[in-house]
View 1: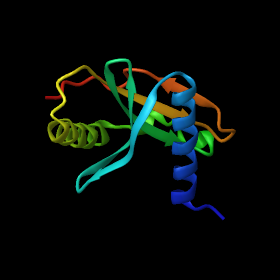
View 2: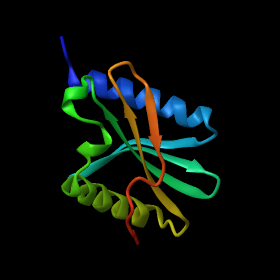
View 3: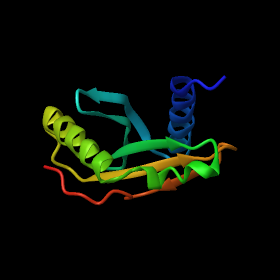
Length: 118
């Protein structure tokens, strides 16, 4: 039986492990606001990395990165702006996407969402 919450949580767990294996430090998970959520927040050196995790169990559904349309990007930016203001963050920020396919192969797209956040 397919349970999206369980699958999504497992994908985020795997993505967090992958980031940590690459030397990043995961700072927060599932940063929720009424208008959206940041799946993972990590540090790479002095850069704050905001990560969207996408899992696609079947290639017919399209790739995970392609599922992040302009509307989703706008929600991510809104959550990011709130998060950065709450933390009074003034350093560099990067938006990454981690996708997992049906065989749990990871693709890490660094700087995948280009935007300016204050």
